[in-house]
Every structure is written in C-alpha cells, then in structure tokens.
Image 1: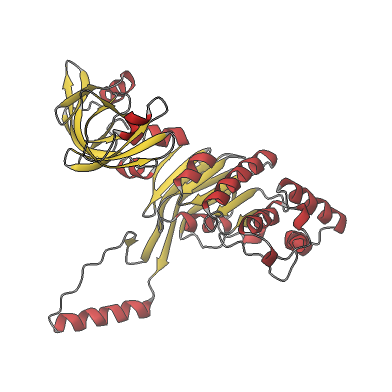
Image 2 (image 1 turned 90 degrees about the vertical axis):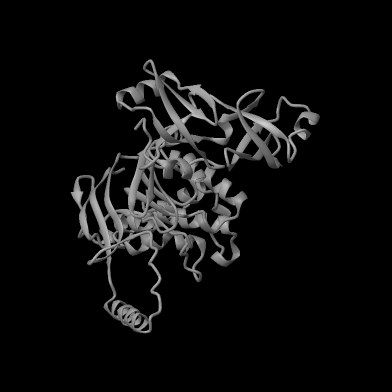
Length: 403
C-alpha cells in the first residue's frame, strides 16, 4: 500500500576513537620491535569518516511490490532494511515513502511493520496478547482488536494457538505469530529480516509457501532480507543482489539467473553455482563463438545481437556454464568423473576438466540403472553445451560482455 524511493542512501559507522588509538599504539609497538604488521583484509570500505556499510543505494519500489535484498553476510542488506525502518540513521541520501521524505521521521510514525529473525515475542504474554499488543498501544477499540487479531490468526492458521504462551510453540508457529503481530497493524510496508533463518529445512520450505500465500491475501509492500538465494528466487518480484555495501544487480529472478551482470552475481545465484572456465571469444565473419579446450560453439542469435551492439571484439574471456546446461555426448570437452552424487531424478557429477573442478547435472529420468551406474568415478566423458547457455565475462573486470 506504499511506494518507496531510496536515493543515494549511504550508511557510515564512525570509528570508535578509543579503538583507533589502541590500534595505532599496537602497530607502533610492533614497528619498534621489528614485528611484521599483518595486512588488513576487510570487505567493507574504510574511510576517514568510518566504515562504509551501504553506499550509493538507489532503488524505486512500486506499490505492493515484493522486493528481496540478498547477499552474503556483511553485505549491508540488513543495515539497509533497518534504515528503512528508522532503526538506523541514514548518513546521507533520501528515503521517501509515498513521496514523503522520512529521513527524520520516527519509526512509529512511518507506518511500517517489521518481522525480526529471532521472533521477538513477549514470553509472558499469550499469542493473542502478542498479536494485540501494538493495537492496544494505539488505543484501538476492543472490538476492532478482536476482529483484526482473529483475521490475522485465520490467515496464518494459528487460531488454536491464541491462548498459548510462546514457549509452548514450535519455531514455525512462533514465526507465524511474529508475522501476525506485524500484519494486524495493516502497515503500508512490511519489512522482514531473515525471518526463516532459524528454522530447519522442512519448516523453511513450508514457511516460504506461507509467505507467498500471505502476500496474495494482504495488500502491502514487502521488503525481505535473506542470504538464501533460494528464498530470493521463489519470493521476489525483483531481487537486489548486494556485495560489500554496493548493489551488484537489480532484476527479476529470471533476469538475474539468465543474464547475470557480473561474475559475483553469476556465482551467487544458482545452486549448484555456475562453473567458470578460461576460454576464448572468437569473432569470424561477424559471428561470435566461444572456444573451450579446442571445442567451439556458436552463440545464439540473442547473444550475437547483444555482443554486436556492444562492439565486443575477440578476446580471452571467463566462460560461465551452469551445471544443468552441460550435457554428456560423444564429442566435446574432455573430463574425468571424480565423484557422483545420485539425487533421485538426477545425478551430480563432480568432474576434472580444463585443469579445474566442475559440476555437471545429468537428468536420469530416461536412463537405465546400468547407464546411471556407469557414471562412476574415474570414467572419461565428453561435455557439451549450447550457444544459448553460454555466459561470457570480461576477464579483467568480471562484467558480462552482453550487459
């Protein structure tokens, strides 16, 4: 029920002066004693002002859109969410909700609800009282509180749990209550900070389905933070992929999967992750092809057009091939199977090819038991791939040459 605009948002955590002094003193002492000072290895940018956690974050979110912020730990996604919630101060930039600048608006006045990773339920209150708490603080009439609590409980299938205390609930039930407490307020924006990370695999799958159903039943805008790319791909209308405080790519699940902007996105999205090889991009008579270990494949018309539009010349490249897009054949790139993992309808082959390890997913639905058994360790195979499934990246910058 709200659109959001994040314009040049930046978050800097200032240095702690005591820590800086202590660090300089320790380095000075080591220097005097001739001890080598280890090189600092950090992901986030450190400036004179402090540590930059989020930088140049620009995003337009449409009304009722489901946006997922995804990336590895420490990439700035939760910090961004907390700035939207008002729990973190914005160092610079502008945050608008429905065209209203809210940088200095208190969290309670932003009409936002947030679901936390650790549920944050009141242990001494019943489920009903946890759901009703925010409404009571607003002095909402008792009848309206009862109506909204029971509506939320029905949506989340927790009506039988209303009289229980949180300690009597499972992890999945507690997360439902935490979500219910947020939706009773009928917020303009629903924020979710890794709400499923404390659940086991089976419960995570169930709760993903619950969130999809919830999204269909309530009209609100969602911003969802996760480090799990499976959650991102299944839940989001659009995905914002972050690394080291910077946005790497924004797009639909299909766009980021089929057209990754750079090597980081290509490796992060997809499970198992994309295989990367040193290869050559060839250009003959205006046609592009890739060559890997002497095996050449002409690229698809769509890729031909994109490369031509960018005036890409023949060059050494990093070739990306997803495991499910590699097939076995009588000709192709030579490989030796190291490990095979039978996964029901498919087998995952870990192979040694082109001087590195790679993963190939082979569909076993049309194979006999003997054929599957033949894919054993030590067997030599030939790998094939189509020109429509090749991802070509600049060897120096890691940027997709089609971008």
